[in-house]
Image (cartoon, rainbow, N blue to C red; front, side):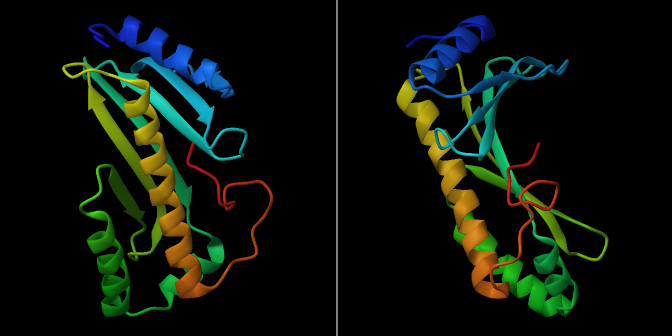
Length: 171
């Protein structure tokens, strides 16, 4: 499908999301031409963002992420720099060739606080429903990979049901 404007992109993507039954929350964001928060996977508590930044005409971005559990952050803080580098390096090696991107946000002590995933596509190529859902799926799989890696390394944390420490996508 040929999409040339952010208005066309907004309408097309919102139509596809509605067709599939997603809950769509429109986010008021002055830096974007449109910005949605959706449930993905469908009907879950997990959220992803779909947005078109004003500063980058012709670009659409899908975002999700995870805040690292407090228990895991405490474990990371007790690791040596070499141990942290080895753990983070193994994650980077696993993620580097994926079609989506990631950003690990560390504190001043090198302890990762959150990880965000993004999938970008431009209007210069056909935008399809398949492309949209491929990006959402890749972001979701990357999130599941991170949760699994941290749980394998540090154990399954006691998670609050709500709040900033919950295993929920970044806002």
